[in-house]
Image 1: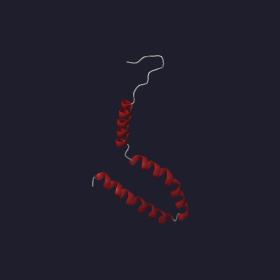
Image 2: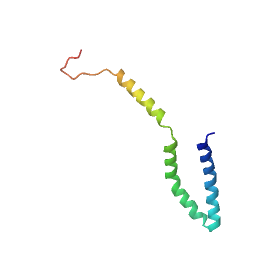
Image 3: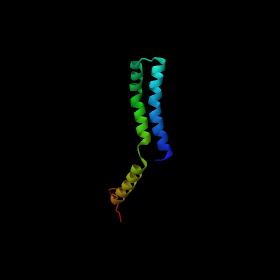
Image 4: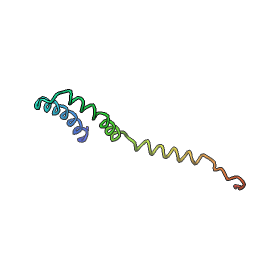
Length: 84
């Protein structure tokens, strides 16, 4: 396991623990905390999903496939012109 992965794991464990401690320390109603978390859940999950999805391999593969596909298609000449 590399350092970056370990730091992400520690952060993901400490953030909820800190959140629960702050809620209990400041007597914040859980209903408002839950509502705020639900509002942020969708945009944050999309941001994280886009960041951690691997796009590099699929785009390179797709470009190579498109290029090979275009080479296989014969060129069609315009009507009235004779091609070699």
